[in-house]
Image 1 (cartoon, one colour):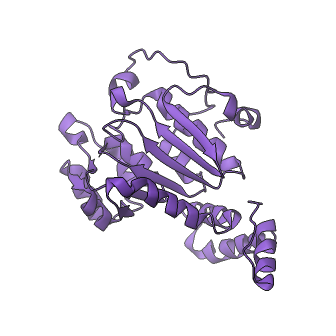
Image 2 (tube, one colour):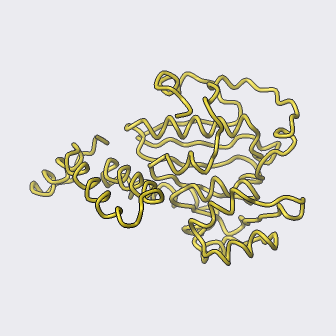
Image 3 (cartoon, helix red, strand yellow):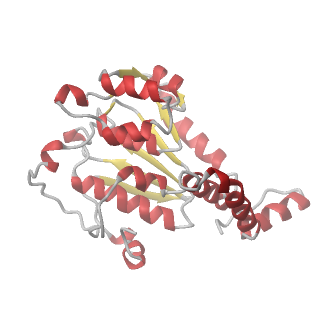
Length: 273
């Protein structure tokens, strides 16, 4: 628990230095806004993403998240100079986390549909964002590159995130040979959900959101929670755990509304509860 209930309740009152925040019609849109640094992930931007996603995960009024970016690079990875101690002037007012921010874990614990709207290249640690999303909509011009070994480093956390998506040998080859994928190649590996022309990017993302929001946000949230928990549940106990989750889902307001709407032959009105 990186943030208290009180800190999460103050979400809308904070100033973000490198992240644009928009909440509308149950959708939270986070836009990386550090274009002069290629949206490199400085410690402050790391914390801002973590705080926003943590608040979203606890807010039943938020049914989904979109992550976009400004500038000619979606994300250049970690800002190594900033992490090495270079001073970063900022007006960010978000609270300090109570522990270490691990972005991969933050995305896993979101338990909401999360769409990456990729309009430009993704490098290195930017994969933590792309891999953390449930869907990735990309333009053909975007490339996906892991150059770490060229710098004497290795994409350790990215490797773990990629292993949830790609076969192990594909991941190792990608990391070891500092490979770069086109959007089409990334789609074939499962890293990208769909490639669309730049002029259709906004429309395609909105269509996906509209489709997802037709369905119970409570059921989806509990399903994603179960997906996350299954990584820790012993295989022999998986079905028992999932049966318990189904029993809990049946007791929700959304489940009652879904059954009532089915009987009355109408569209359900979801509350996210």
